[in-house]
Image (cartoon, rainbow, N blue to C red):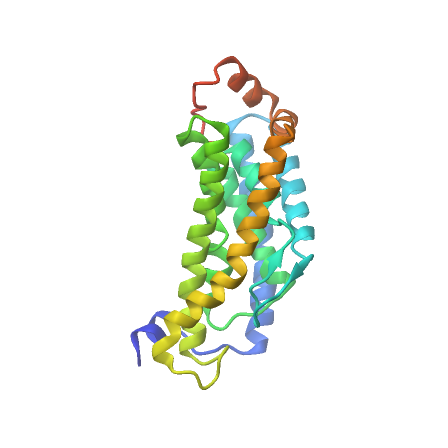
Length: 246
């Protein structure tokens, strides 16, 4: 057994198992929603805005994810800036809430198209690939300038997402799922090209939309709408980085 197959820790699973995981995924969303509620109420008593905007952001991202083109087979879609609502939420409310929102969005993506090869590919493609959204909130804490934090956070999110999908792709290509009959030794090359084909355009679309929001001053308007206290703090002390990691 190769190291890669050992890391996959299972052979290709059955359709019945996938359906079972779908049910578990729905339960996981409920659990994550409860965690989000607890986090919001812990950081700030009765912070209903954080909960409401989390729901709006996740729902908006989920709807936008249906508007897509698929230049590659077996997943890998270019969406209509589906990451933008979640990235904005993570920027406004910080890395912890951004992480939970990203995980919920990732599980929803699985429910939208329930397919996985092994348990490891599920973890990679639907959990770890969407968890880096928290980096948007982290970038806001690290970089003082708004533009720098927005685009650094977005770039970091997509870079980590690419790395995660790349390793997932190694498993798919190694097991001959996507390109049956292709040499397994070239799995890294196939996975690299496969993921670049759709992730780079998706990142460009996301950055263009964010750039338009920044250029038209709609980004700060959204920040003020979603979290007036954070917006006011930045206006009073533009050179000071907000230190809360809510």
